[in-house]
Image (cartoon, rainbow, N blue to C red; front, side):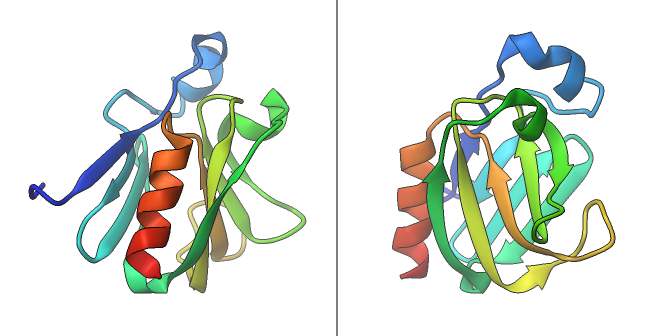
Length: 129
């Protein structure tokens, strides 16, 4: 990592350890922003794309644990979630879909439950605006 890279770790709600632990999520997982790349890790799963492929990021809240914790795909759209807690997440939208992690389709968005929601959303939006 260079001095300009930013790392945003997930918030790990220990009540849901039985879900995220078997999927491989650990304290060194989260989102890394470099000068030109977005990388989100969740155990052995990874989403990586150029920052130029991100259209925007926004905060979402009021999660139900069974929809937010774990690695989840959305049936409503082609979104993906890397979830470790229910406090909220940052939904990152892609211009071109990223390679599928789970499910039948490539992903148009990724929601991540990092600890610093405001910080990640602001850092992404500053870099892609």
